Length: 192
Image 1 (spheres, helix red, strand yellow):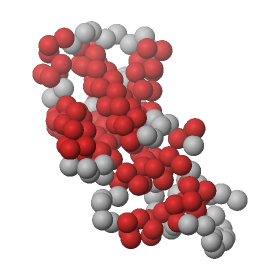
Image 2 (tube, helix red, strand yellow):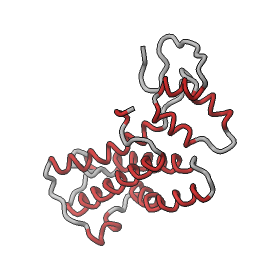
Image 3 (spheres, one colour):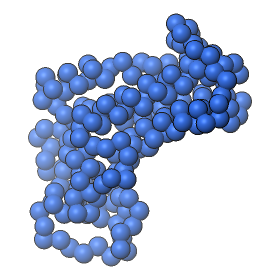
Image 4 (cartoon, helix red, strand yellow):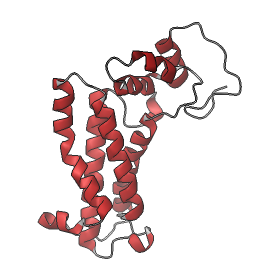
């Protein structure tokens, strides 16, 4: 019986498979690939402990996939609700003035630099860290400055702000999708 993602079942059987093969059998290929991508060069000993079936660690790929899904869902809901939005145009930066929005805006343009730096320095572990930072920043924006009208008092009051927040959601969706594609992980966990 397999428990929740990343949690051990009631009874964990000892495996004689090599660590990576056992981890793939336990977690699936994509979480293991992401875990391998997160591992710094020279830290292979730590990897065995992290990937051991039943180790009880959380799956760091899951929140990144959830952030992508959340950003895409925000866009889909805005379309389905036929929200009154206005194209923010060149005012997008001025309309996204909450601290959390500014923090996220500070992260998004760094994707090409992170990719080039990770490739040049042979440090693939830098990409997952970047994606995890973008995901955490998106979560803060989603809670503190939502784009949809059911965000309470924080919901946008004018169509231009709603439009700017939807542009931000689309940028998050695109950055996470590109980053996961570079790592070789899917944007959703359903095709493991």
